[in-house]
Length: 168
Image (cartoon, rainbow, N blue to C red; front, top):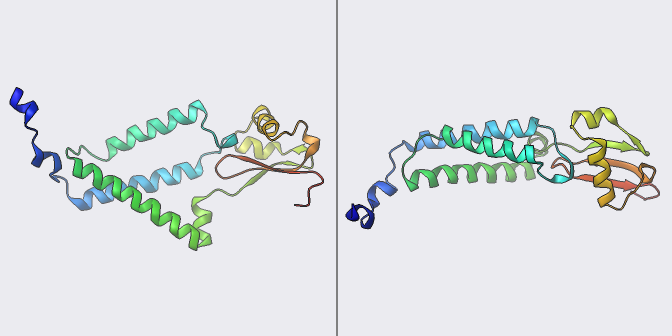
């Protein structure tokens, strides 16, 4: 027993038992599917994670780890991480260079207030409550909708505002 604790199996710890192509395909498919799902989900206000959103992300991470397969070595885990980092880098670089890719992976801003009036259809579509909107406006030192020329919920969930009388 003591020998087992004192002598780790270094070869098994770093051995690759799963074919590299399988690891790469698993990571690539999961990255793509999660990207599509996250793109289809409504945004939340303020760019913050609500408790329900955090729980959802943790569940996705747990499900994804099971879908990666039962890898047993550090090397296989590092390969999976490297493939995910690779796809993240490629998509970021491609979305910077090609506008159509940017539109595929990033949600456009959606107006939620125009000329002091709530755009309730857009708010419903993004599951943005009036209380959440007003909280975000107060954080920007806006106390009344009458002060708002236009407000958008941005792709990452933050609320951006153009005040009345502003030249923008």
